[in-house]
Amino acid sequence: MSFTLATWNINSVRLREPIVQQLMQEEAPDVLCLQECKSPVDKIPTEGFAALGYTHMVARGQKGYNGVAIFSKIPMVEAGSEDFADLGHARHIAGTLENGVTIHNFYVPAGGDVPDREKNEKFGQKLDYLADMRDFFRREALTKSIMVGDLNIAPREDDVWDHKKLLKVVSHTPIEVEKLAETQDAGNWVDITRQDIPEGNLYSWWSYRARDWDAADKGRRLDHIWATSDISNAGHSSRVLRAARGWEKPSDHAPVFASFDL
Image (cartoon, rainbow, N blue to C red; front, side):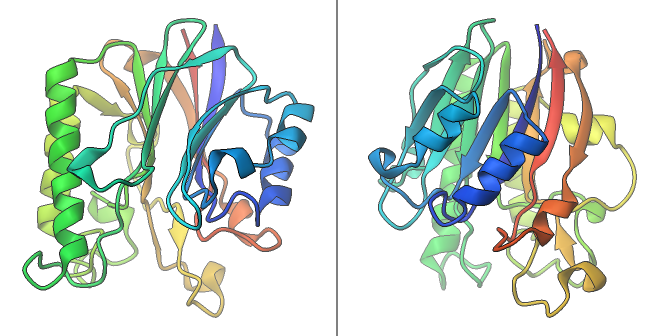
């Protein structure tokens, strides 16, 4: 079975329902994973999505913040969720497709503004969350799995607009990059996006603060698609839909795509 998957931090699924539907109509991924839905599950606008063929959903929600959901045209059953770092946040959901592939959808904490856990509780929570993810992957020894989401870390020098300037900025600090690498190694995960696009600057997020985000192009690659090593060779056709960052009332993130032949 071949399918295309997209991951997108939507920054409120209800507020941005029109552009979610636009993506579903124009790009039509078989599976769409959303983060930062900012909605209880029962308030997610599923009716319009189902009318476009997305009749299967697994989700975890909260009022006003966090929240993750997977919408699928392919039959899918829930495969659980974890509360990493015991934060009580809706940041993880998993669903298994009818071909046996399990998709894990994550929204890793952003970590605040100061990269020091002694001065900034949120940064400590982010590091603890990553450590719990690492331990979970080691314990579960996942196979035939895909992991997507807003991981809130741009690991490579060419994943940010200026490596040196961002070394002390949360999302690109050495300790975050190190912890993300540990998490990746623990699950034998392969970064599908960079497997397909090994060289060159690549971003999926541009701040709302920029007067002209497109011209300034001060981006970061915070959104990721990984696959376990047993199926990584099946991944292909990775891309970032940069144009979506310029849609009406946009998220500050752009959707990231990959296709799999499994």
